[in-house]
Length: 300
Image: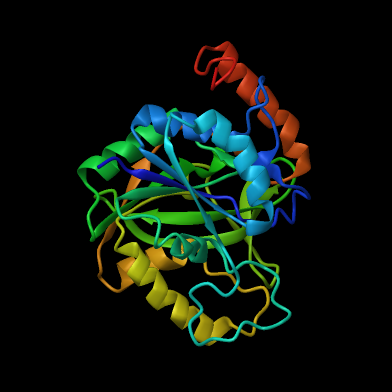
């Protein structure tokens, strides 16, 4: 059975200010998602599942269905505020989605095979998809998950702070811990992360970080449901709280349920956290096309 690619595209784009998931960056109007899907198909993925908000489902389908029809199976899942919340009552003032791990949980009824998870607004590179497909086809089990590890210095935006899952990796190449740092930036030539209290801590440029490119066995859904219930018990009254994928990965390890293999890549990541990132993304894609790594038109 071919693995599935789950694309997280339900974010509110609060920092970017528009639906960056469907903005055109490639020479023939391609979105960043187009390049991820193209790389996934080449690597052997057999289905694409989009996590989106229902209010822009029509826009999404109008863009992607014509070019993907006949190339790969597609499905759509909506991340709704009350999905999988059980007996918890969602506060009326809650407008922010519950986060990336909740998005995965929303796909529980659409995926029955090993699958990868990516962000819609990140360019990951062909190497990452090849390595992930090999893992999902050969090593993925209920007690072995994976994450692609990027070098932190190759994932920084010049235009503001970024959020990264900072990885601690053991001698055997497995994740020993992951900490979500929500404010990482360059300060006087040094990469630092800033705590809520304003304190700054340096991070080496070669530090492995997660860019939310994960490989999971379907067993992750039951674990995510259990952890989401615990999360809601503690955080349902906090309108800014989020249930991140690293929370699930960290608890998977901490509770001795299994291991997470780090798949290292030296690829240069790029993405659109801020509007000012857009010209750089367009230039990077143009360079890859010029070098022959992608055709002028992905779906011609």
